[in-house]
Image (cartoon, rainbow, N blue to C red; front, side, top):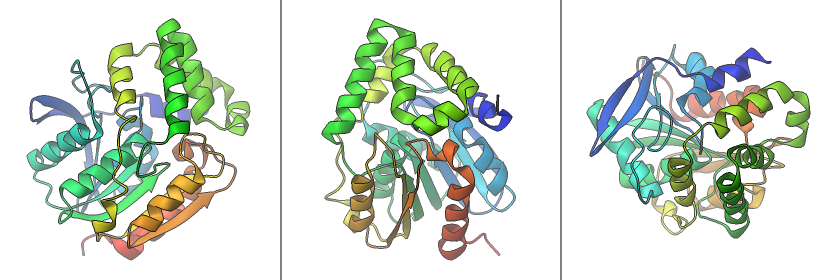
Length: 278
């Protein structure tokens, strides 16, 4: 198995930080201006292991597990993206982070947008990867099918998740990793994962993100089934200072399928818009 991919399934050292009524697991690395990495549905902070290593020499890197995920609390009941964003705002307050660049993938991109709207004066830059600005019927149908499969069989739900997030080319190229992902996803507690999934269904900030004044970059894979190119492009159009990129031949998991291309994009964006402190 590709060791770099395998590492995204293994947690990093960290600690739990109080976020209102909950505690979230957080890992911190480096020093300087803060970059906050927000993972997607069903993943953890470990998704960003490669990027943490890349940027920790120049920035203070903060990553962690959103509610219902990894080593963070998994409350029962309804989850919303707004609640997840509020969790992260409380964590950043607890860590005494006064300004930040948010890098959010998929559900993490939705959390990033909601967090930016909660604290626009503290959000200095925004990178959205595989994320639109509102729920969409096609994505919801895929997610509901994943939930139905997961209720019937943990393995079946995990296989449905893999089929929806990885491109066919990636699955053919990295079968050992895909199998490891399926095994790990099948072992997750169903109810917290289901609650986090349902948080995606009724969410829409498309009428509000035009108020954001921070520079932004929006990127999407050309064969992403969960976030269409059109949805990501519309998000970029709505944010006044946003740029837009399509990564050719890549599915939803652009963080894993095209990390070098993604990092070139992030490197250029950070150099222009969020340079390290002098």
